[in-house]
Image (tube, rainbow, N blue to C red; front, top):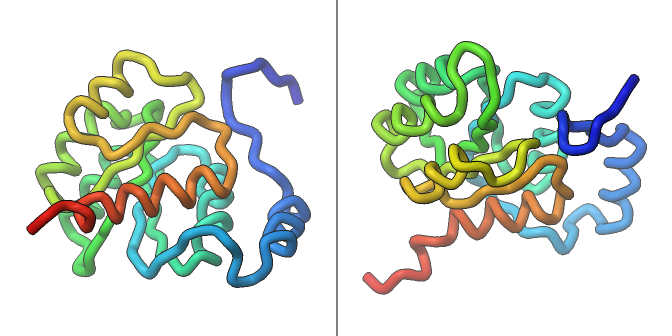
Length: 160
């Protein structure tokens, strides 16, 4: 396998995840919750790593391999979807095109944008349009957990 800095995402091994979980303990110091999170990424390995990072924290996960399927899921899923983790670069429909459609389908859903290409103009435009956060790939479990919790709790800190 060849690797170029800044391109792609190399998920850690199962042993790395188990070791990290053991180091933090089963309850861990990482923030968690019971909300439902939609993971939108065309790379199955990335989806699986994110699931392994956040499901032990108590979150329920759904996934879609592209923006079009994410929008369809957002429209048809009968339960609540509290947050979406949206990759910017995907076939069929990318994150930039999916974002406004996800907003339309679920205005209350928070959206965190992820990308291996850094905070470019497209990602910044989504932040300007109301995305909760941008997290560059690769990311650590603690960074993702904290970003999710901040996004989900953002409205709770506002005065009524």
